[in-house]
Length: 260
Image (cartoon, rainbow, N blue to C red; front, side, top):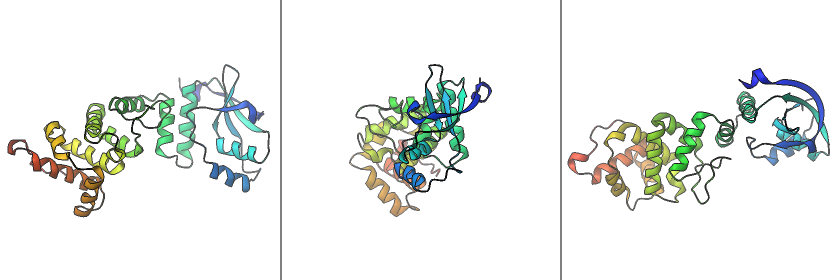
């Protein structure tokens, strides 16, 4: 049942000390809290959206920065819209809905919320990321010592274009080529490699690709792509990968049909 069908709401003042924060919340931007504090307008602060759980605890869904700002001003509590009957996943979905309708939330906090909401696509994508030996800094995607993928939008695009199997295969290859190199899963390289995989997945010989990239660092490949192509675009990077691949591939293994 959807969260909108299950929730019932009451309005009441709650003490901030009684309100906790869940893992689907974005990290606190204290500069933003300070700005709200210094430009505080009681008529504009509105109500906080809070979930009242079956165990009796209260959890903030929307208004976390406003709550912190009010605490900075020495306030002890505020009027809240309190929702009853929500599951943890319902709360995370509401967080996503509220933030999609308001200021843009950066890709990583939004992915984290999607994970907390147990969105199937997000869970599937992060499973592929973990199996490839990477992490993404989400509450359910941490792996000790693993390189963190920060280029979340490029990662999501690659997953959408390739599907889980090809996406995971691409990440495994990136980890084999450049283990512990953050540039391997940066925006430019991930976008370019995903385009290369999109067009040539069935023709790629992994041994040839490994040989082609031997001794080449992601930064140098991206820099050369920027000089030879139309800037640091995914097409330029994909073309540079294609060029290196064909440079070492035997005649019958070369990828001749240029698709980019």
